[in-house]
Length: 72
Image (tube, rainbow, N blue to C red):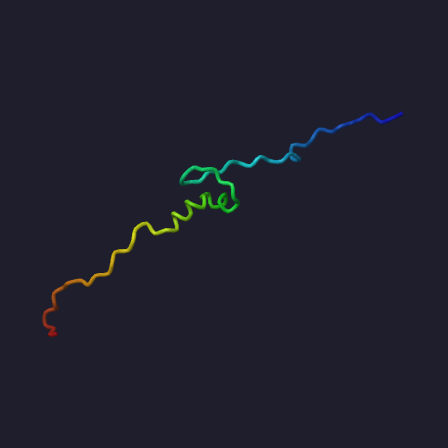
């Protein structure tokens, strides 16, 4: 006499979890790399944020009047 072939159903925890889609916060493209998913930004968008928004104005001497009572 042979034992009946018993198959057990798979537990839900044994199935691989589908990865949640993570999109870039700036451009909306899907993120695939680990670091990009942690930051929530793609590499191009992170590079844009690292750049300064506007250049610093050039230094210029300020013209001002001499203080009264002081001689040059």
